[in-house]
Length: 387
Image (cartoon, rainbow, N blue to C red; front, top):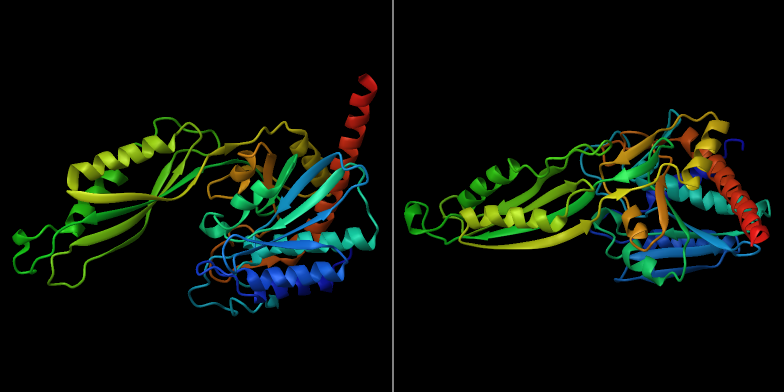
């Protein structure tokens, strides 16, 4: 495929639509996608699980409809923040790169998926056995509560899943679990000149966080995911310098390896809280299980063959962050993650995606789906002949 100005323009248009989360509003970008698909004469449906938290789904049916694969990139981005070389919603093209919030995470993957649909329609490509179901989802950056998590329950039967959310054509075969906890500590206010008359929630929080950060979360290590981690991502408390703080709130981000259970982490956290806090509350903000994928799966082998054919370097890698592969695997869907972002660009200022990645991405994804369909056709025929 020659380098397409249309694919570049499509990526720029997607970046220019503000879908920062928080606050979270995917309505405008979803309507853009729906209109794009309508121009291709592809029917799509909108799904909302909260007002303006919109998801778009469309299907490209195969001839025999024996199997199905769900391809899902996400529409939301993290907030822009900071000073940018080019505006975070500009979609500026410079030096073979397109700049803007979400360029790599994950609007490049949205653009590749949409452009692939257009290629299939223009070239009148119809797979034989493999239905293509595209789900352009919201709310990935804050737990998928209004995105793929409830959406996947609406699908009757999905055989395979491909989460389009990776960088530099790397294949994600393992992912840490996620546990986000909010801890509230309640003290008793008093005049700052008489601290002994109150109970300082901030002081209690200092001791709590000190011990939590020293916790041995797990004695085992994973060959890919290494060790579990804890980040204190947010803290807020107190009213004024001369008032004993009666309240403090902090958020904890645990990343877990497959051998760990979230219930045990919560239990260990509570032990520390009971040691220092008279009154507290602990809430689970988000939770995802750790994931491991069989690297010998035919889904992975076929993709590796396509990448080798196009002389594209790639790695089988873990994800220390969180994609949505676990939500699909929890529904019994054989899933992995793959994508076309630029390495080290997700969530940073001056985020960009390489134009070369976009064009290679369309070719690779097209060839992969056609090779996967061919594999399924031959293996379905083999099983039928043997029965």
